[in-house]
Image (cartoon, rainbow, N blue to C red; front, side, top):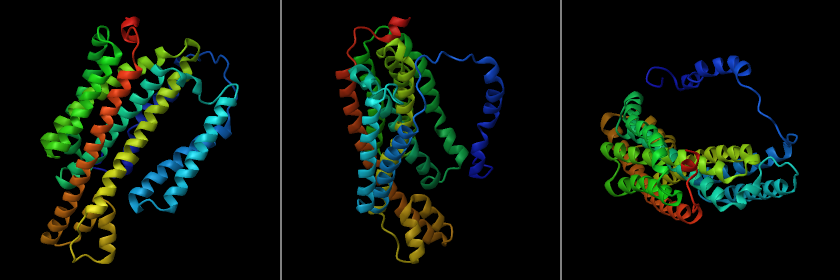
Length: 344
């Protein structure tokens, strides 16, 4: 869609799927039992939105302008709102989010692993797609085709892990799978961000994340009491979404912060061009489009080097986080039998 149409066209991709769902869903999907569902709690919703929004804003503002009073204020507001949300959930007879499930170490560990793995994947996609299209000058279609092998590996790994989980303990299996994700970032950190390296790293990352998604979601549901399966599923989905947000803001913010700090701009740029080019890699590419051939190449060379440095930094950081995730899985997921094995 991006190859031939404007960026707004991507929102049309969901329309052919959503229209049949909206029409056939009420006819074919039976309503599940609501059990002891309580009334909607608007205050809890507002608290959770303020907490996440303020923290995300603080991270993004810190990446753009450094840690100043605006960022600190946002962090404080987010933490206070988050504390108020948790305090309210513990007091409500029917909470919006059942935090009592986190008393189980297995449940908590699985949620954390699920969140971290998605953050790793989204963070990788964040910088890889920019690098392919702007630094390597690939078209949107070509860049997307480069990532297809990794997506295929995610599907294969997600299906192939089921029989493996019948024989391997979860506290062993998930660390091994997380090691694939760690190896992907170690490869980029040590070998650079060439096209071949990114293709191989993306495949390794998807092997780990694709299989982890299958196993961790099953462990999350199995670690919760049957009566709270719906709440457990909701928390699992929330962890997925939070992981996507953190992958973009934290890992993407680190790349952006390094880019802005390391970028050495040529002296021939105007003040407006300097400001735009120093914001993001895309901004530098936009400025380069209005320059002569030699000047454009000089600007994009400097921008590409700064962005690659950011990729290297984030890859080392994420490799360290993957090691922490391996330790978390090893310590928290010690159960007698994998849920997938028990269910089969």
